[in-house]
Length: 246
Image (cartoon, rainbow, N blue to C red; front, top):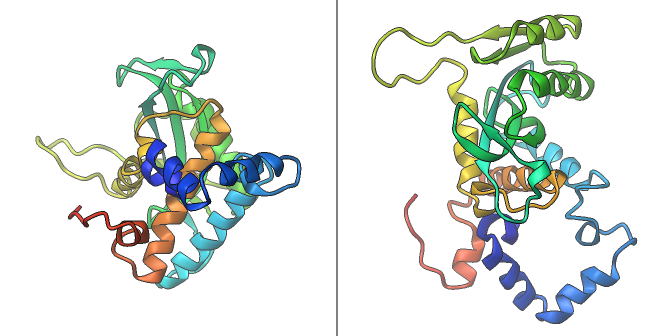
């Protein structure tokens, strides 16, 4: 969790808290043991997603909703990549003029993540949107409605219909000036939550599955704080770092 919130600084704090070098050696020796620290934070064996999904169900109940959602929102966000990301794993999002990777998300109507995929930034939203719908239908068959923006092509609507999911485009208002789009503003807020974490504001992960795991950890951090009633991460209080208003 430290690593998601603070990036490189978080790694240093973990090392100090675990006895510095000994803490890092513990994870190295644990390779092949099945522990999350030895296997990329649980990204390989699904531990991270299991923890995230359990917290999502508890968070939904905490906010007065059923554990299983029935409606969702799909969108994608491009982020710049660091030198750690191989050139073959990057792309250029011509519309946003960003070179890096793209996070494809499906969230529920509360903004909690239901499915996530990571690709190069030049991959079209529709291409991975179909795979997201496949994952959503397999994991949460209760979802029968998905809202999307106008950037998605007709093929995703037909694909959703074959899965029993009604995909609807949220039209932009014709009035001038800024106006939150009905339904779709929820996932835009989720992107804002993710960008508050240093490990997600810029893609520093060599492997795309690591970025996917960091997305789950960021949302787990957000949900656990809501469930425990914390207004700020506890590491700020424990380490003496002064609190700042958001």
